[in-house]
Length: 165
Figure 1: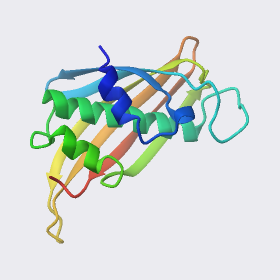
Figure 2: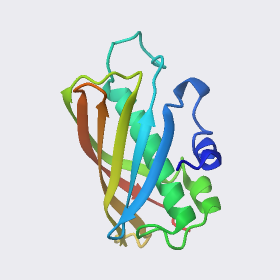
Figure 3: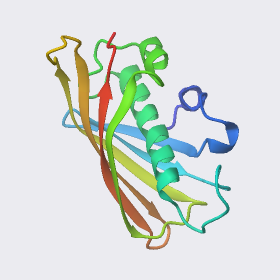
Figure 4: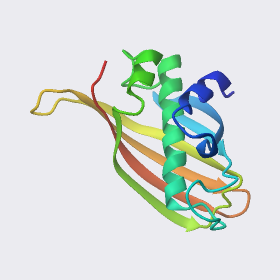
């Protein structure tokens, strides 16, 4: 079930009209955390109604889904890579230290943005120490969105978690 208090805290940085994530269920299989989510975008925050989910909204929804998945993983001790984190660590680093290094989306069929589902999984989370000596977490993720009809979008994203606790 969705942890409503955690979800509200995760979405705090977003303007009210940009809080698209409505619910999320997080699970762990074989040491990899994943989330199944529900989204609603009653009105785009930046453009007239396009009639479908667009790339900006895909990215905003991904961010919200990812932030909740990381926070819940930290809270419940799920997956790998975040074992030494506390929720305070997550909220301190949520905006400045969780970076999207690469983001790709494949739109298969238009998605009704007023009600759709999303899924995200961590494919890998590894600790890296570059020549600079400042360790960071490198995470490979995959995501997908669907609506009640035949709408579909999927993609991958690479994350960097810097300034580790």
